[in-house]
Length: 537
Image (cartoon, rainbow, N blue to C red; front, top):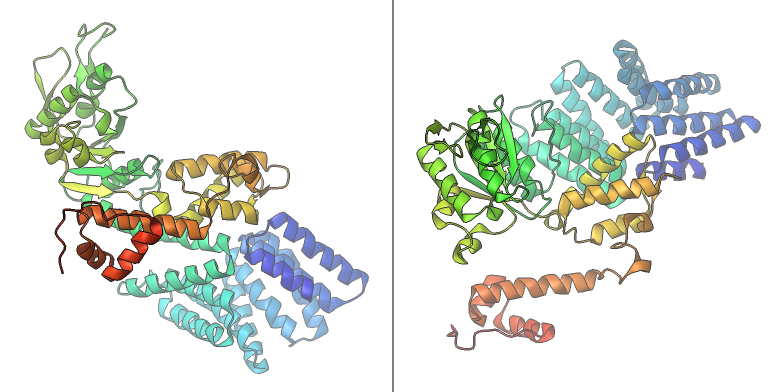
């Protein structure tokens, strides 16, 4: 039926569950009214698919049990029996009826083989793979999953192919030497889901990646969702840094997740069970910052009514994270340098040194090396801190993370508001092209407000995103050609500065001919800059 095909297409693209349920129920009522049992089975099957997509196993059970009964009445070994059967077996597995699931899946596999129905046979194999996985039979699970993948690829079933890749990612995690396979399957699934516009599934793949390689310890308040190569590299380095006491400076724009990366460093090493204290040096008055970090003695200043232990001492063997260290005063920087070199600190108003065992991590929104050159940051402190400079990339440089983060935040706000939210096409496009100067923090805040304004039907449209996104309230976002031209301009300007205006070296750095560089300079209205730079022929 064309209506069911359209319903499944909308389901795969992340359509609202409630609307899809209503559509499937309407199709079933029509089939009953027309006394068409086959159409009723297909409608029940579609309704169950809506529930299965969201893993609502209990809700899928009733329509599938009704559908299998009708199917057997129509034809005891017909195509409907094994079509409905493997779905019911998957549902049995979801509700914990493992033996029932295994019996039914094996029966459906035999019927599909007998009928020569390769597609439905592959679907049965997917269920059997999950069964084997549940029972710890990893080799059998992989065999079924790989056989299903091959069939889906040969039959050119893209969505099912992506599902098989996704399953094999999970199975690869059970095999110690299969990290390369896991990455290959994950990237294949992501590419297909992205091409099909299945953003919910795409986000789920990325979220499972985080779940498979835990970034935060259970119960931690912070977490970080990442699937882009750039961010995964940062997280890999962060986990490695957890096992050494190397000095680290985290650099990146506001809202990129530097504090979460600092927490990952803390949680990945032997300090995980020790305190973690985060202090924003830009949010505390400078005369109080020393008291916060080093502590103070009673009477040291107005309002110091009692002794106070500073965060450095209170952290013990834990970690103290100093965010926005670039905002700290010169006097504070000097005292912090002393702490790092001597591993002792003096509380304000005290002459007795206190031993400091905590690890100190720092972060900055600005490039510290540039601040050193402009004499805005203490050089000795910079060299003491910057054993490792870890740059956290902005969101615009990791678009792969945008889909996963959007899906994550929509799920969070759906739970809060008690209804499901989805993006309309115009909102989805606006989110993709936006520069996100406030990075992940801005994305979360925009989606939170959008969900509030979209409570009526759960569909987030561009007007719900706020004035920077709404065409009616301001100039249009630059189109793709303009964005490409601007990116090209920035890269050429950066290369020219690096090569001090030397066109030959700049062309070599950019991987273009000297003539090609000249053409680009004329088209973009740029000049080489330093006319006295010697040209290299």
